Amino acid sequence: MNRLSLAAAATALGLISACATHTAPMIDGQVVVMAAVETAPAGAAGDAADDPAFWLNPADASQSLILGTNKQEGLVVYTLDGTEKQRLPIGRINNVDIRQSADRAFDVAVASNDQVNAISVFFVDRTTGTVTHAGDLATQTVEPYGICQGRENGVDLAGVTYKDGLVQIWQLNVAAGALGADLVTTVQLGSQLEGCVFDETQGLLFVGEENRGLWKIAYRDSQPAPEIIDVIGGAAGLVADVEGVSIWRGKDGAGWIVVSAQTDNRFVVYDRKAPHTSMGSFSIAANEALGIDEVTHTDGLDVFSGALPQYPRGILMVQDDGNPQSGRDQNFKVVNWADVESALGLPVLKAE
Image 1 (cartoon, rainbow, N blue to C red):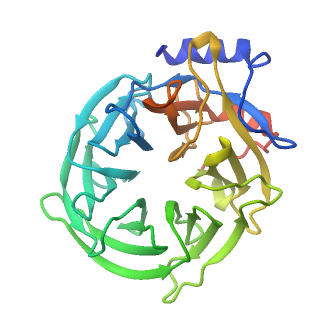
Image 2: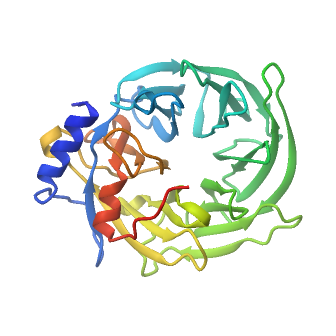
């Protein structure tokens, strides 16, 4: 595995973008991009890596971090060039998400921990970037599967999804030295869920039902009524399993929802604003010049829409099922979001 510097990766990516090959199933209009960086393996044999989340270093963006789950062991922390920085073996965590806030000395990440049936809480020191396990909050339900985090008006939220179709919305107390959680509302969908993302600007929670499609839930409502956005088997190219869900966040609610269509190694992009029109789909081919294999069978993903060194439009981070064989050295790949914009012909929006 070759983990190059961001500068070298970006340069080589541009040089070979016209000649890459890709073996994943394709549909009409599907485009291809390549990863610029890959992380070290998440560790453990077989199915290990699952979901990434991005932490922006507020003082120096080049020192930002990628938090990735190893669902056999715990949390792995990487630098932006893919080097492992920290490993926190706290148990079988599946998904992870993070929200940042300048009004406190630490940022908060949450993970779904089915070993102890809880929301695992992590603090990220805003000065050093050190990640610590702050504790666990019981979900009162067996096997929390997916998780996403929100923060609005100084309140931390967690959305937890389950294999039986249950969605829980929790209000968290994550003050240093004191952890607590109150269950705010629940929503029942029909079958196994995992990926989700809060859109606080619109008051929506986007949720992937693995064998049905993509939903939105107005989570502030006292009795939310889920609305289906797209179903598997449609023209957009969404297929089972519907897995990772994230948002490239533009100003005033503009932006793009990115969804992993796992079986066909495909990513489908939708307009963040209703009626959530499909904007096209893409796959991630091998970057042969950098020795980075293609991305297959992606589970979790995350999008960051701020400017970073060599990535002025942000990045997409995705789990990769194998390097190169399935279940071998699973890791996370980093894609230049500008390449996705260019390949799909997306309007260039101002970031949130």
